Length: 256
Image (cartoon, rainbow, N blue to C red; front, top):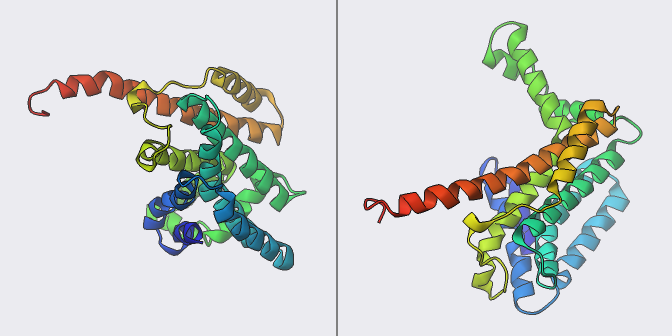
């Protein structure tokens, strides 16, 4: 229940909740650290939320349930699985992100079916944001500001699954270095030694080719796959930068 309360900060606390919700999986991982299955902590919560969705059938309930399972439950379950598998950190991160992407795509497609996902999500984002007119006026006079906001809104809606997957990846990567503090035999590898999953180029190629040549909605799926893979490569890029610059900064006497 505590993990659900932490996740609820995402909606209840503007801006601050975006960061607090990243901690939602920590209570569940603590259960795993004690030697018990994490399902004992989140299973009854998920069943209750799924029952509420079936009874009231409200789209916002679907979003909350899916969000809780992705942001709080899935990182904890992935850690639980990682403890039983000889995965590298890069492979674990890729699995976290790609599974989150698949779940996000499936949920969003099911919610708007039979409409096209990209168009339906854009309309939902516009209604949730109260339209683009008022914000467009703040950015500039005339149609330029409104057009800019409309394009940004369309991009956010179009890439919503990949943004969701990268947010879940952020939660998992925040959790990783804290696993040894809980007595787990994972996450002790220094971040500068992080390496990407060796199969990521396949996802990069499929996403890029699909985004260029495939029709909708396959183009939408490919674009989100491409952005997710680029996000994973970005993490590797940060590790490379820290590997080379970190040592240089560490040798600086002012840093010491």
